[in-house]
Image 1 (cartoon, rainbow, N blue to C red):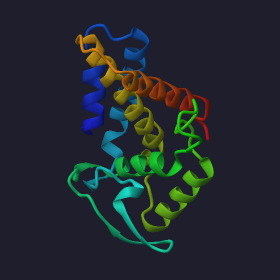
Image 2: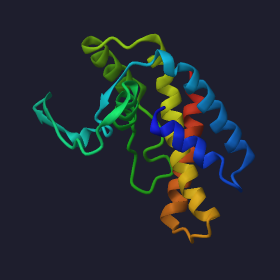
Image 3: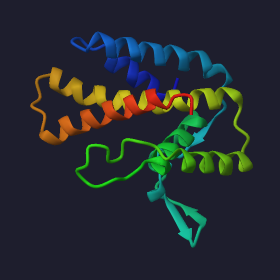
Length: 176
């Protein structure tokens, strides 16, 4: 079972978690668990972001940062890359900074990926669920620290708000 799924279940099951978030997490976990048998597994990079790539012009010529590599579902790296490549930067401090995904860039990334490796149907179904699971897991992680009595910083509350906004954006653009 992918670590993101285990962590999401664990964080949602902690005492004091908002019942709506628990319900959402349970739904995502159930849907992802149902797809697991059909998801190809491999050793994934674990952090497939732009910062891990070396470019020569527009060509990727190297990949760095394998300290998070581990066996997992293949689509996990694609979900991380979609979020990183698709993320829309507005202005630092703007309420919508890094909330939306540029669906044009996401489409280009998925097309390029598909030219190299054909995703199975279950991966395309799992992709938005993994995006959602990762956002929810991160928000729940910070909320968990508060429930454990840790005093959160303004930055922590900003990150919770950001993850909530990302989830709302994903809800609005689910079909796309």
